Length: 420
RNA sequence: GCCCGGAUGGUGUAGCGGUAACAUAGGGGACUGUGGAUCCCCUGUCUCGGGUUCAAAUCCCGGUCCGGGCCCCA
Image (cartoon, rainbow, N blue to C red; front, side):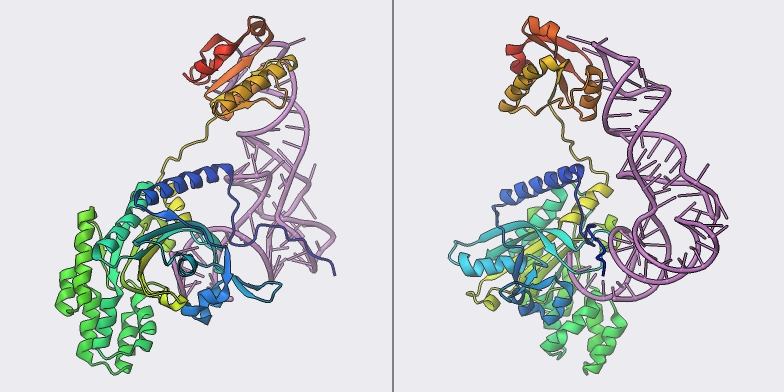
């Protein structure tokens, strides 16, 4: 049997070129800044966890979608498909005594065994945060405002924020006499807007026809006052308060959508999604809301909420919108005119680098013509030409690459002159 | 996992049974001390494996990867 070599990049994974990394790091830096600006602190958890961490609530069926393996100690492990569960595990194990509110954020790779397509990879980067402690409406409003601000401030122009509330939907279903263990299949149909099937299912569950009709109307509500006409619970009141605070934080553009159903069933209460319509089929950039996981992991009950942003999609959205990312530029390129000048040139590039100037030097012993060409291709702002004629006078030439103007300066004055 | 459509030097493309081509990028040179111009030279390619055929980049089957959609979801 001959082995076929397969050293290609695995399906659904990507290599990132220097240009792409520059974009990604740029966006990451801004995200970190914004989180810190809101009082969040960064955490990191392992890339793999015990499989059970993910199956505990989501059920065995998610095994189909995650990378699962056994280690040499026969432990069942999984590459993390998301970061909320690991971060909450971390909280339960080591951070329960921290003062509240506890604001944590993360940027990390996650893995899902999915069919890859644009904006959807088997290895992808998730950005997110968890807010632990407060359950006030202003806390949730701030969280949603943060998600919105992040996407706006990294430069995405066109985003759509939609708010929903699972407590209200659940209350409605309970009022109709639907049992809790029947919610899940109904929520799925709601999510897909398959109203005909939904109606059929509810009818099978012996819900009265007029109630089904009302429920369908309720799901179409696109503002909070209409929701109030259908149902009166504390959840509606709280939802209204969240919306009011959201406006105070400064967001007026959002939609109310009772059809928002988060994929993972530990969500409850206020939920939200943010889309970038420019992305097409995989347009969801962010999803989040209140959830309950701490008691499930053995911790003391506490309010938790959070959101996750698809980092890769955010990058694609920026690219699609024509966002101009910064370029990496070198400040000074040092060119020894001939090999005798090399030692001198190395001393100069060292001196520049020690003074925190991005400097590079010709390593291919090329002539002046080729070196200048190279310097312009790497977008050097200036070149320093180290030649014998000037060396006799203890000088070098500084050439400004955009204007082409040259000045001869004393080598000892080089540092102050390059900074100009 | 399912249904479509793709894959040709690093990149972008032409060729669509008969000697793989162009542009660009890369390296060297014309120009032994001045870049984005010109010219010359060099390097490098048919996604992979089978099959049909005298002959396959081209036709057929399968795999891999990518893109559009489904499922699911970030």
